[in-house]
Amino acid sequence: MRIGVCPGSFDPVTLGHLDIIERGSRIVDRLVVGVLENSSKSPMFTVEERIALLKKATEDLPNVEVLPFSGLLVDFLKEQNAVIVIRGLRAVTDFEYELQLAQANRSLLPQMETVFLTTNVSYSYISSTIVKDVLRHNGNVEHFVPASIIDMIYKFRR
Ligand code: PNS
Image (cartoon, rainbow, N blue to C red; front, side, top):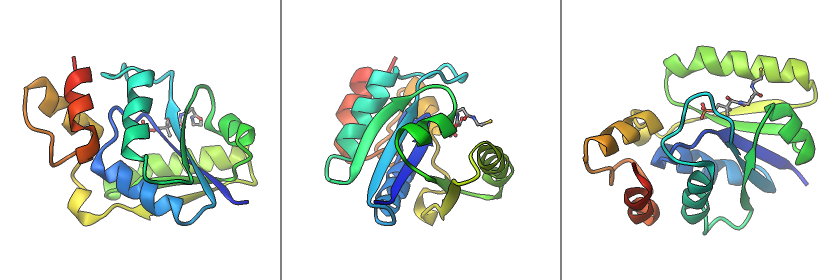
């Protein structure tokens, strides 16, 4: 069985993330969405809220599971028996960081591979940072996040 991990902060999950998760779930047998618990980014949503949003957004994807992780991604891969990491690439500005991450991970766990999926052009400008900014200013995030989680997002926002 080919197991993949799609890791991230998901603070909160966006339409861009969901597109990568959906497409990623078609190239592995089981896809674990790994939600980073101990992010240095001081998230707007708690890990429980981020997981609840992701679970709701991915409820129609039978081979997708959402789990928290802390510490190194490579340790989480080992725990999950996964050797594939799936990440989305929006633009060239993502590339430098993603390359560094993929190379650092592979030097820690040589048998793993990172697979990059190019973001759907309609979502390439969307990021969790933009969603949080719009939320903070009481704007409408309907075009940025999955429809199924809109109500939860408004309930959870602070
Ligand atoms: O959504 P993000 O914030 O871009 O995701 C970044 C993430 C979670 C993939 C990355 O920060 C990560 O894997 N963190 C865990 C710690 C780790 O393994 N760091 C890289 C190896 S040096």
